Length: 198
Image (cartoon, rainbow, N blue to C red; front, side, top):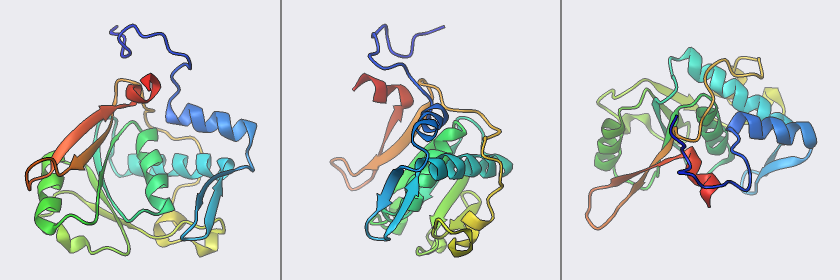
C-alpha cells in the first residue's frame, strides 16, 4: 500500500471527518462547534455530528458515492459548511463555487467537474445551470429547532451513522476554483491528507 503521507511522521494521526466529529461529540457534546454570526445561529458538536451524518445518508440515497463530485453553490452561511462536511463523510469530493462568478463560468466549472449532484441554496437561482449537468437539490436554513428548519434539513433521514464510505487521506477532498491569470477559472484539486501535513 502506498503511504499517502510520503513517509512523513505525523504528529497527530489521521482521522476521518466522521472519526473527528465523533471524538469531539464524545468529549464535549453540548459545546458550541460553529457559530454563524450573521444568521445568529449556533450548532453544538452533538448536533454537528448528527446532522452531517444525516446529510451523508441522504447523499447516499441520492446515488452519491465515494469519489463522486458534488457542486455546492451557496453564500457564506452555516448550511454550506454542514453540507461540505456531509459530502466528506460519504467520501465524496466537494466543489464549492463562489456565487460571484458569472453564469458562463458557473456552467463551465459544473461541466468540467462532472458532478453527481448540484446543491444550491434557496436564495440562489438554479436556472444558471440550464444544461441539466446534474440533478439539483435545493436547501434552506438549518435551525436547532426542527420545526424552524428549511425543507431540506427537515427531510433528512434520522440515523446518525452514515451508511456510505468515509473519507481517507488519499481521497480527493475538494476542487476549488481560482481565476488565475486568465479570464477562465482554473480548478485546484487537493486531498484530505494535505491537512495533516500542515
